[in-house]
Picture 1 (cartoon, one colour):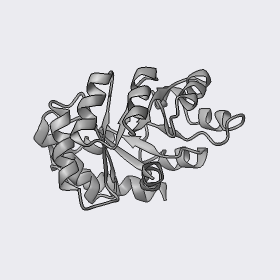
Picture 2 (tube, one colour):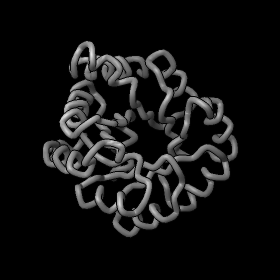
Picture 3 (cartoon, helix red, strand yellow):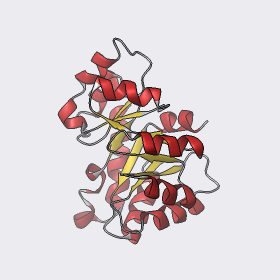
Picture 4 (cartoon, helix red, strand yellow):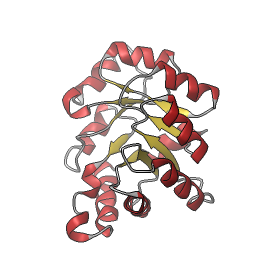
Length: 206
């Protein structure tokens, strides 16, 4: 089941490439560094083409899972689905996208910032719920929600650093999304820095 593999991989590389080539390189170097959930955001130019290329590239690797992020509407959900995306992630909680995902048997992770939204997302069938913006919500939110809702899978995305990733994990994060923190050294050190930082996140969490 794809949910189990996503949770086992734990980290999501949230990729916003300035162009197709950059997004593909960041994705490949993220995988080399040990992050195998690849989330190509629709803020990347031609995101669906990037998803398709990466899906084909990792076709023989069952651990690498390529999906789409910043999915704002059903048009983008359809583009991602046709490109081979195995999961969809939104910054918001959308019943429309959830319905599309259910109909087409694709994992949907909506973004939530309140308990009410978390409950709504679970009723929509979300198996993993994105906490966004996690730096504003804070890790104590996870512990608080797990009081009345112990089985909800909550994934912070944004604002997680190498210094605090262990704290998020210990607070009960089922997975963690990492975006700009993976690419902050690319302009100085090249794409190899993505692998180095990815490894640092994995090691810090463990």
